[in-house]
Image (cartoon, rainbow, N blue to C red; front, side):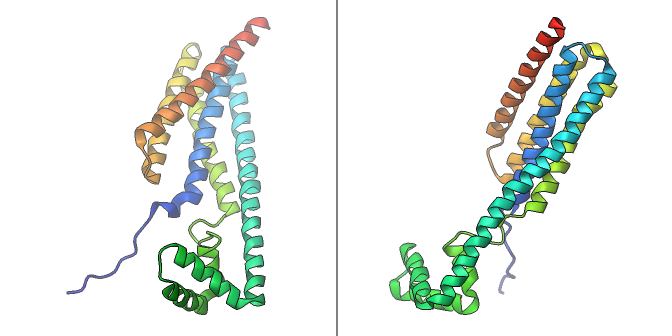
Length: 232
């Protein structure tokens, strides 16, 4: 009895949205928690802390969206330029492009005669896709998607930033710095574990990495807030 074929799901297909999601959530949590800790260390009121945190959320989400859109758009522009150049080369000298693709396959271990046969068959079906994938490294799974990256970053930044803001509303002002710091640290560790699991990476290493930099960021802003709060 023959087994039914089924498509395999590889982790690389998640790379576009996963990168933007993890970066956005981590940045939202770290930057907003650090801002709140810094303002609270300056002995501000609860209202002032909330205003600062909310402003940080809005500004950060917009900044993340714009930054991701510009960055990924640049990548997309480069991909389109490469594809346009490849299209012109295919129209100008098809035999040279066949030889180029066959050379790529031969370098990977195929017999030269078989390499040319594979190149001819693939190019007969879709020459541009064959060269985009095997010569340029551009595929459907990894192609740049600026709008997706921008929206993902803005949304996940906002979700990450909400956690320390909720703590400002729930906990006493006297223990706010400790509660926000511990909650942010727990959230960062959870995000690190989630991102590592989704991407197939080492979970312990990812958790320790985000926790370390989160502690550094919050400690630095707390020190600045305490210093300037004392001076003022």
